[in-house]
Amino acid sequence: MGNYNDEFKKKIVKLHLENGCSLKSLSDEFNISKSGISNWVKKYREECQTNTETKAEYDLMAENLRLRKQLEEVEKENLFLKKAAAFFAKEID
Image 1: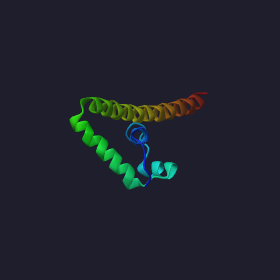
Image 2 (image 1 turned 90 degrees about the vertical axis):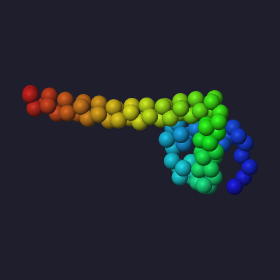
Image 3 (image 1 turned 45 degrees about the horizontal axis):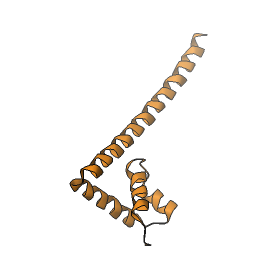
Image 4 (image 1 turned 45 degrees about the vertical axis):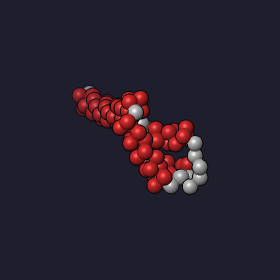
């Protein structure tokens, strides 16, 4: 594995933790081993235990990921309800 600067590592960790990108997809896209990315994530999480600024950043990333997933679920439900409403509107006519 090559030498990567801290900014690049943080970008990859953020894509995983905040955007929910899988280790495999990041590994494939950036040509980095999954174990390397996993180590970066582990080190970042360890840093969160001692650095309050990093911990706050991690908490924001986790909350952002949770909200993204929640929004995705609500959008799916909304689409289903629109389809159901259209179906029942046809039945009434």
